[in-house]
Amino acid sequence: MKEDIWRFTGVLLFSLVTGILTGQVALCLLAGCLLYLFWQYRLFRQILIWLQTHDDSKSPESPGLIDAICREIDYLKERQRLRNQSLADYLKRYQEASAALPDAIVILRENGVIEWANDKANEYLGIRWPQDNMQRINNLIRHPEIAAFLNKAGIYRNRDNLQHESPVNPELALEFRLVPYGEHHKLLMARDITSIQRINQMRKDFIANASHELRSPLTVISGYLEGFASDDDFPAAFKSQVEQMRKQSERMQRLIEDLLTLSSLESRERKEQDEVVHLPELLATVYQEAQTLGDITGHVLYLETDPDLWLKGSQRELYSAFSNLVFNAVQHTPANGVIRIRWYADEKGAHFEVEDNGPGIPAEHIPRITERFYRVDKGRSRERGGTGLGLAIVKHVLVRHQAHLQIESQVGSGSKFMCHFPKKMLVNRHDKLPNSMTA
Image: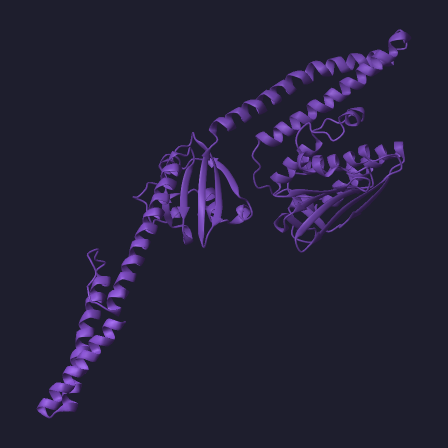
């Protein structure tokens, strides 16, 4: 600052002296100011060119304010260089770590534009980096289900994962996950689950085959036990033992039937069905059967249904799910308990509810209650003949009908099981139905 003031003062004094000597004071002062401004302009232009060319050479030197500005710019440039170097190092380490992952990683911009991908993305998805940089992923992966999942369309709108074969290797099973982050960015991950699916399939096949093999000999055993129990000539001393064996064989038969049902639900892919299920009639059947069970222990059952509300799906599967929920309520509600069954619709879709005033379920058990063979009270469940598979069957049936199960319960205040169906699965009885339904 001081150098600039002294320099400008010197130019004015020189111009003033020259003007006095020549008799043109005003003209000399004007000429001096213009020359000083032109010199300053040249210095600022040099700085501008230096900044525009991103030249790493030393900045223009000029004592005074301009020199201080240049030094500050040098300092900021050096700090920015170090920051960029640090960010580049972080990015390099991130890319190296991502490349080492066993999963395919693809970073997507808005509209599915590929910003980066690791090596596994080429192996699993056929996406090459950097060859496919700035390409739209829908142009590279054209399978309809994967494309619908990436666009969050249809049934994948609210789902965060998809299991599907690799678009470049049909023998490879992948689990896709799409995670939004930042502004309009998404992280696509594809994990190899081939071995997991193979193990699960082996488990399902084993359960199905073992259940089929056990059913025939168990039927024979049950037949003989029933014969012994009804034979008046059978020794009375063994009657109680035979009765116990008969009850246990019935329990084993129920377990095998549930295992076969669950195996069938897991192994068969559900396709779009045109079957229209008369839900009020189906629920009336379930209600009557539950009343037969409830009469033994004095349960009071209420049924409330919308007679015009029908549903698209599998009648056999829906009966299995709804009857499991209702029969479970009867079995786990103490004598003289109250059970309410509802079937209704609102703006969100259709809902099936089973509410009881039983002992309730502790909160820590609710997340796991739909797992197969999981029991809240193992002893009491076995005494009542439960197999531990009912809610697992319910869960699989609902998934196959694009629905979901919600459980609300409080210890000492009963439980409520709710099945929520989307609107597109509903049919009004007054709508046009297949001929088989209108006859």
